[in-house]
Image 1 (cartoon, rainbow, N blue to C red):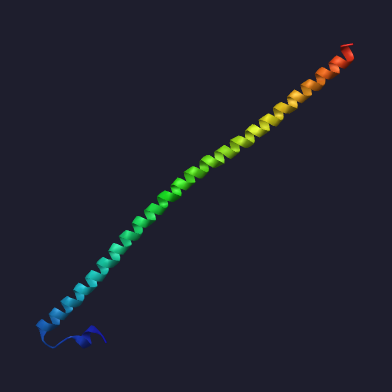
Image 2: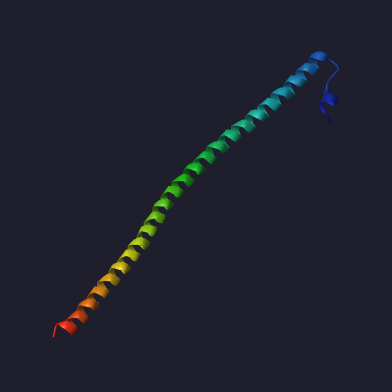
Length: 97
């Protein structure tokens, strides 16, 4: 059934019915707008949480990369020290006698 079928023949009654329907629709629109605002607030909170997680993980990634670099430096340093020790032992063996 449409609004046209519901309208009374009296103009004042028809106007009152149309005004009532308009108010109902206006309230429904306001409800949707309020819900939209609430959802946007929730989405903003989630965005902030995701930004915080991203910042935290960036720090962790940087720490892991620094650890890997430090490990490479330590391996390189150990190789240099090992080579120096080997050269020293060879020197002592051949020239130290």
